[in-house]
Amino acid sequence: MKLIHYPRLDTVLMVENFIKEHSGEYKKKALWQSLPKKMMYQTYCVIIDYLETHGRIAFDRLGVIGWVWNPEKARYYAARTDLDPERFAPEAFREYREKQDKKRAASAAGGAPGTVRDRNDGSRVRGAAARGRV
Image (cartoon, rainbow, N blue to C red):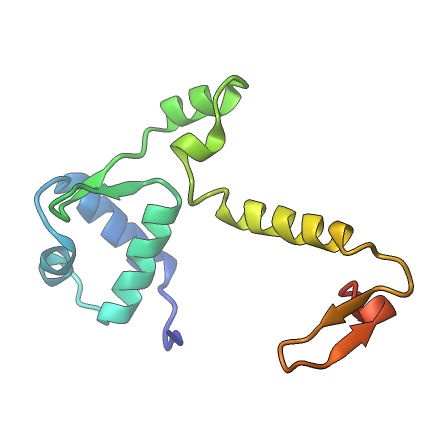
């Protein structure tokens, strides 16, 4: 999906505050229709994705949006070393895991000057290009 318009900070804060005040009352589309200021649905979806990714809101099994951000608890759990971060915030660590997987794959490929890697079109690359350094 290509973004046509990125939300301004005041728009993000308006949606965030509206969700705080009406937590557990609306589903996604009904919330959008009830906002005090109208906006494009695509822009609204960008804001909702941002808030969900950063752990500020959550959806229950019926699709109702609730405010879940608690900074004190977030700091408490972030400081604990005995917890598995993927269990509590899988979305926050997805990008990190993907980078680690790419590094592991690159190291498994060797990395020597004669390394050969297949391209998507069926051709092959050698050396630095195979290691992704070109």
